[in-house]
Length: 639
Image (tube, rainbow, N blue to C red; front, side, top):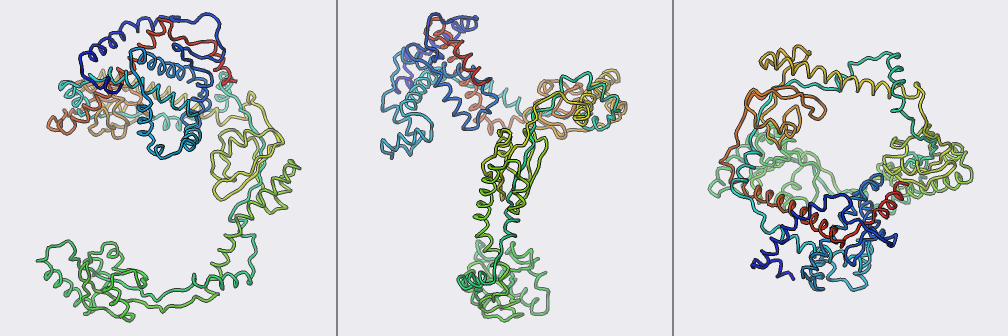
């Protein structure tokens, strides 16, 4: 089978011509409403029929669930994408049906090789392990998984034939290079609605009138009165008593943790010879000897290291290496360092890195830190060992008591020495910082009914339990409830209109004054700004994506631009400079441009092939999509 669609034989070229010809003819039927509409009785679990194969409600639901588990599809968008996904799943099966009708075959070996290519680890699994892998990692039965893989291979066979001839001509490559790399520069006036909104100062009467005119746009969403009991790790740790006996016992059991080896605090200057020509060694050694003379003569070691040392990481700190112990340094360096007394400076020490000058600042003998010195650290360590279990126990106890008395959260928190939090009118999307920064806590709270108690919720270093004491249904608001929201909306709408009026005024003035931007800017109380040179695919400094100006790249110098909405502002300006693409760099980009143009053409052909085959089979009655089953499926997700 694979030899068939890799072939360049005449028969394949004929088949390609037939397929592409079929595209043009069948698209006409596909665009006729009602074409291929099903009739007669059918199973109410069958979404679509493709030959003798069926696409079931279960197939669609499993596909949707996989997308939701992978967070590729938000739950509130499911009903909107179901028709599109059904169309895609049906098209996949239609493509496979047509491939089989044309004589393509996918052997078990072809299937196995393809599965191994996308999941090499499968090759080493036993049949039982393979089944578990597919069910757990992919969420399908082995039969479903292999059937879907086979469908994909049939589709790939046809698509590869349809896309084999995709090419990018030299003229197309050159045109695309010019399109990508030509640049323009704008002088412009930028109108920012956010700044304008801040200037809008509505009166209370204006806001009330606006509210009266737009009551339908405002609603107070459902809210809850939420009470939380929170166990904060730092606060729980503070409440854990640690006795002197516990500290002593810990100290006795972990004395090795409190032993410090012999160590010295040192700094050095390095004149590096590594990776430098051998004939420079004498010159570099002479440099090191000169630096040593300066140190011996009372020179500032830190300043000399900062200016001359090739160990850049320590040079910026005056050559300081901090405290070092045995085993941290190369042998020659270590031997010299530990032979020095505090305040002493070495001679020239040669290592694999180069020539060193070492100075020891302090020295400490190996010792066991006394208990008094480490008592605070031990106490903290003991608390850290105990706090996790203590927090879980407290949270579990709080939840158990809250289940018995949901109205007693404050008393329970006080009894257990935990934090009590009351949130009035909590709404979907509101943060709950007292419980920790976790986006899952809010939805968990909103899912609770009145009097219900949540599971123990963890966020960062906090555990919390929530209960809902009241649910306030959505309702039309009073003015006083949302005055701030009304003001914000009023300012935003007014700002949009002001920006539209001012930008139009500036644009009209530009047309009448010969393109004098300074005069136009002055008339609206703003200044003229300049972008840098930018391309269609680049970014205009201070403005935004160059794609907003794609339609003016072919215009001459002096062309007026706008008003154009660009991101968060509106722009009025003109083209003041053009820069043609540098054709000498075409060779550097040719391969990537060819690849992208061919990929684009292949994608277009693939999409057209799928649509045309689906249309042809629908016309012939080989494909039937049952609209009533689709509608019932959508309504289930809507409800």
